[in-house]
Amino acid sequence: MPNLSTLKKLIVSALWAGLWAGLLLTALQSYQVIPSLLHAEVYEQAADHQVHVDGTVHQHEPDAWQPTNGAERTLFTALANISLAVGFALLLGAASTLRGGINSWRQGLYWGLAGYSIFFVAPSLGLPPELPGSLAADLEARQLWWLMTVFDTALGLWLLVFAKTKLNQLFGAVLLLSPHVIGAPQPEVQGSLAPAELASTFIMATAFANALFWLTLGALMGLMSHQNKMIKS
Amino acid sequence: MSLAPLLIDNVVDQSRSDALKDRILPSLFAAILGLMLIYGAGFSTTVQVHNAAHDGRHSASFPCH
Image (cartoon, rainbow over the protein chains, first blue to last red):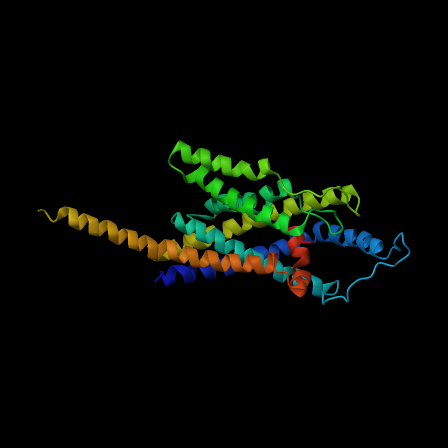
């Protein structure tokens, strides 16, 4: 049987840290991230209504439910952000528990930085955050590369930081680099309906918002881990 | 035969099983729970879930569509 008290503390910490970091991310996204997405959708919708060369009008399948723009859409984005944040916090908590927990919010910043590198920076090097209406390679191929990159980066960083032998550290470095040597799946033709400046604004804005998000998530998990240790001792 | 090695071995076994119970298993459970949440919000192909989580996926740099 696992130590249920440790598991409970991990879950409570992740729920608390994920809630606040997810709400912060939602607030940060209102600066440039969501405005860029909405702007790109204008181009996408304009293209949808174009008459095709052969004279037929582009037909859409009956639209499935989607949140209406405004408060409803923001609410669902906040829910998605919080779910992701709690999920990330559980992984961060799990990894740091294997190393005996986090000693302070400052040490938590390093765990947050690792999470940012693993889940945002490394995948974005091959597949930059994309606006709706961008040409991209097959979705499944991109998801597979994304998963491989996240897994390799996580294991690679772990070995680089914690491995005791030079050989294992070297193996970690190889793992870190390998997804980028293999290369992310790219579309045959690069292109986007939205202008290039909008795409680069979106990349910068998401890089900034996610950095603050991850540092906050790490610091909050560090704070909780430290408090749990204090109660124990 | 001295009992010492046996006792030491027991101590090592004890600390190993403590590590399993106190660290490894809770971490494993928490990680599985975390992966389920990330899959649901980030990768679920259900159209309604995709539409609800759309902006969150794009801004987290997940391959979305």
